[in-house]
Amino acid sequence: MKQPPRPRRSRAFPPQEPASAPESAPEDDRRGAAEVVEAPQASVEDNSRTASASMRGEESGSEREAHFSTGARASRIRRGSEARDERTARRERNRELRRSRREAAARPTSGDLLRRPIGQSDAATVLGSSDESATADLSERRKERQLAQRRLVLTRIATVSVACVVVAALVWGIFFSPLFALDTSKVSIDGLGEDGATTSEVQAAIEPFASTPLPRLSTSKVSAAIGQVRLVREAQVERTWPRGLKITVRPRQAVLAVKEGNAWSLVDDQGVSLSTSPSIPEGMAPTTLPAGDERSRAAGEVAAIWAAMGDELRSQITMITHDGQTVSMTLSNSRTLNWGVASENDLKAKVAQVLISQRQARTYDVSSPVHPVTS
Image 1 (tube, helix red, strand yellow):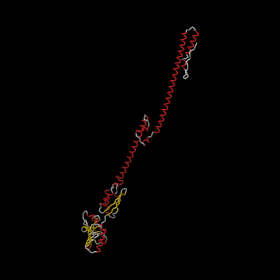
Image 2 (tube, rainbow, N blue to C red):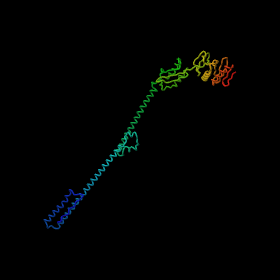
Image 3 (spheres, helix red, strand yellow):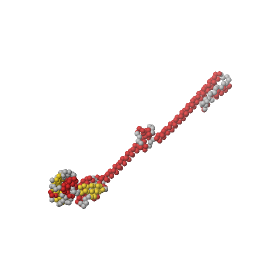
Image 4 (cartoon, helix red, strand yellow):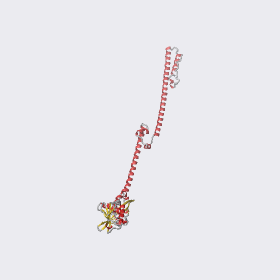
């Protein structure tokens, strides 16, 4: 009896455990063959049923093998896809890690940011990407920068405050404290010699400036106050640190003798009367000066004329009169010398000396020294 065909096995996917199902077909075949031997009288119909059953068993085994082969292929495809996905994810993680390391190495420190401030628009590029971690890192960097800037501002404010306090202390110590205040006992006065009265007047003039710090003391005001002393013509004031003054006085010198009643007032070239004398001191010019504002100018002009004359001409003069405009002189033997205005004094003095020595006249006029006149 013809055996039913065996199911073909797949070369790519050999059957494994599910092969137990197809073995039922041979068992059925053997059982059918035995039934045919033992019962030769079975009908053709029974054989047909047996063949059909065998064919159905073969078909069911093929279907089970095909189904198993498809499941195994799908399982291997799924495992391969999972492996590829895992390798791809691992490469992505490695790539992200390398990128993070590069960004961390290229990211500037807080000190670099302070030395080279950047704009807010460039902060994201310098500090990292725009994801949540980069945003948090950027916020932290901003806080650090703000803290550093605040600390720098506070340091500057503290430095300026300390400097202001130091400057204020120095200003107070130099300009307002008694450390450099004027001490009148440490004031030296030169130029007055043995004139104790004038020295006392100078010290009294300085007294209002006592206890004034030297840096705030005006030397010009001190000089002006000393100049109010009658016998002081000029005073030069210098500071001697820490609390003294050096005063050099130029006293007035009498050069004119002005007739005032029965006495003579001794006057300097500014018309200031220094003292009185019953007679004309030797070397002084007997003078009559105008009153009022012209007195000082007239005294100066007469003093200049007297200084331009020689001793021989001076010995012949008994009076010099200044009326505020011109000068005239009375000579011995009741002669007159018209000087005119106080100009070209040296030339006029020489011409007058020659005329008086060479000509006998009552009047000599040298107001125009180039064309002198006698009469």
